[in-house]
Amino acid sequence: MFPFFQSDRFLFFCLKYQKLIFYFFVSLLVLGLWEGLIVSPEDYIQGNSVRIMYVHVPSAWISLGIFSVIGTLSIFSFVFKIKNFLIICKSLAPTGFVFNLIALVTGAIWGKPTWGTWWAWDARITSMLILFLFYFVYLLSFNLFKKNKNLNKISSIIAILGLINIPIIKFSVEWWSTLHQPSSVKILSETSIHNSMLLPLLIMTASFALFSLLIFLMKYNTELIKLRNKRLDRL
Amino acid sequence: MYGKKVKLRFIFIFALILITILTSYLILNNLKSNVVYFLSPTEISNLTEITNEKLRVGGMVKKNSIKIDSNNINFVITDFSNEIIVSFSGSVPNLFKEEKGVVAEGYLRDKNFFIANKILAKHDENYMPPEVKEALEGK
Amino acid sequence: MIVNFLNMDGHGIFVWSAFIFTMVNFLTLYFIISKNLKKEKIKFFSRYSIYKKDKDRTKNLPESKETVSAIKFAVKSKN
Image (tube, rainbow over all chains, first blue to last red; front, side, top):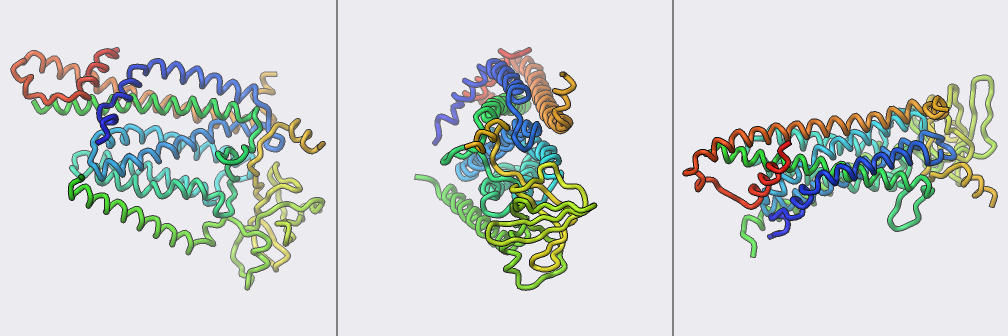
């Protein structure tokens, strides 16, 4: 079952090019900051505070994406008991957690000048906070049940329960009336962000994605060496 | 093809997902009044009774409806089928403008009059530079 | 001009604090993860050298492709 994932060919391919990914990330980040902070225009109504979007939106996208991957892999790792998937999930979680935190905090910073409040208990923001709690509990489960042989079961169930929250976050702005505006970048219909602002947004998204890949690879490497250390200890 | 245990675990996960979807659907449906951040003027006019509870009204600020007294702001929130007059004293956010989204938090006096103690500006999903906005309006 | 740019029509404090918060989080995450990686590598090398000396026990070590290649990369990126 899943020989590609078990042989880790893709992951070791990435590990080999870790340095390249790092340089690529830094150059994209510099380009994105330059585009976002200096080149791109102000918004016709928000003024300069629109620039917060360039860190807020990519972080939110990536934290949602990472949790979706964790949840999906957890289903497989629970049903087929694939140990490698558990390690992949464990290595993905810290980045997703940090990106979720960034999305919440920068959202609050954006809310003050735009809405007139730091925080509102509307559906989008509350469901994002729930995702943050899921990330927290998920990470905590690896510490609490470190020595428990049911670790795979417990963490997988947390991730699968959290997976239900993802579509709720995505569609919260359409299903209910929220203070948070509906999404601007759509797959099926036209995007309601002007191209001059969409460009830095996409560059920042790419660089944030590379950053999360980089952190994932480092963490994954750490986990593999940890396993090896345990085996050496047993000798 | 797969062992009995794999099948059992698959059924367990499938049931778990179904149950969570069902429970979250039921919870969200029952708490609908709490999940919804604000009511539209139409929903206000459909209310059967006026309570003293704090609530929020949201919609568009009607064109030419903002009237500023000494320290009072009166304006009309519309959803293009119903309207409600809002009275507020205090400072409004920068983005509070005519024909823009707004959410007012406060108490309902009657179905046509709302006393707000907090005004939030609601942003829409459009982002563009001012020149583009002007060009669009010029058309 | 620089003051104007930093101020951003009064929104500067929000914009800069959001960007600085993001970057601080990036740096913290990066350093925590790389510190842990280094720690595990050092542990590994100290144990591996002991284990290498005792060649009779080599057969007992369960080798798998993944861990072998992980070690290769650990050795390569020793610094």
